[in-house]
Length: 456
RNA sequence: CGGGAUGUAGCGCAGCCUGGUUUAGCGCGCCUGCUUCGGGAGUAGGAGGUCGGGGGUUCGAAUCCCCCCAUCCCGACCA
Image (cartoon, rainbow, N blue to C red; front, side, top):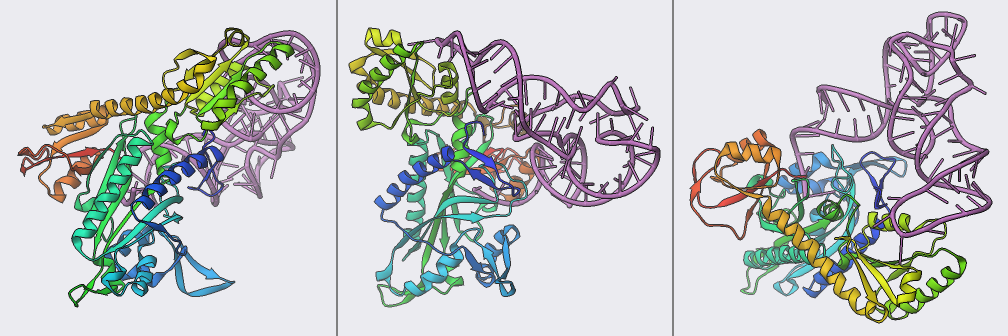
């Protein structure tokens, strides 16, 4: 809020994404969109309003979503014959269209993504993490075989993981969801889970293998290579503006947020320091010449506002998470240097005038790496191998973090654990110890450890 | 929908219990001037209020009573 990312809107549960926050979203979009396109996907736009009958076509999907939907009942001053749902996700709309577009294996795979807003009538909203309306992207793909769809679902999860880790500098666990945590209407849900600094965990992205459920519901058949006929295999995957929430909670310190350099629209800000009018003009012209080289490679702001003192500006830019600050005062002009200040460590580094343009990219890289490593260390230090249920309860309540424990695989145990600890099964990790053990709750047989945590 | 709390200036709050010296205050922010400026400046002045809404009690209500509305926090649901 103080970093001017967002504000509460007049409607309960809705937020305004302010320019600082929206810039972050634009950078998230820009990079993800590039990754989607590099992997063969294209963008399209589908309508906001979905006929009620569409939602009802896939039973599990309807049961999962209709309680949290906003419904339009009136239009043009009249009651509508059929209510229109504001999309909570677009599977039904998109598959109704795919039915028209897909007739042969030659039409496959169909790889479409959409950037849009959706509405889910959440009962307990929270800024960025759970709002009634939010922005996201949803990919919807159609394939010839189960294997191909499975491959796609995993590939997209991989893209999410690399984006979140490399750009947002947030380390994640990747894995699959248990049956009870699965997306409504999916055969399999894959997820990346990120640990926040308060010990709670945030689902940062999901990818689903939808099998043939939606194809059956919307009668999407295609002529196979062998001359037969089959239902199309589907995937869907999405990330949302929740990622901005993740960014804040993963990296912020007591000075404010920290924007990873790779996502910063404004990576560098220059604060001039002067005492008199003559010093002011000297310092500012020095900064101008300094910027001549830098501006080619970076978006740089010179904060020459007269009404604030330098110390005020330092704090303000730190609050907003600008990765690197350059201070230039009379002393620096005299010594032909500039002072570079890292947002992540606060370290001040004096750099000779003609080396500044070299040091900036190197420092930005270091900051990017440092905040990732710091978050990674935190994640690892807060992942606990648990064998006894009492330890599970103790640690989850005092420290939070991931409980890496054996689980027998039964939904009953999962539900029991959740009701006793409020921790849910976040994922069955891909890369886990395939050791045999006993379920942390019931003591039944288990072949691997899974991750439990309190989640947002 | 269950439990808890709160609505007083743009933001954060005090005042309420025990009604009247309150002309409704304080901090931050905002506007103007001067001095300042290498880690959230100082000073002098200034603007800004249907005390959430409605009703009631009273000579008199921000304060007591009733109803309504809204928001926040903790649960159930969820990205």
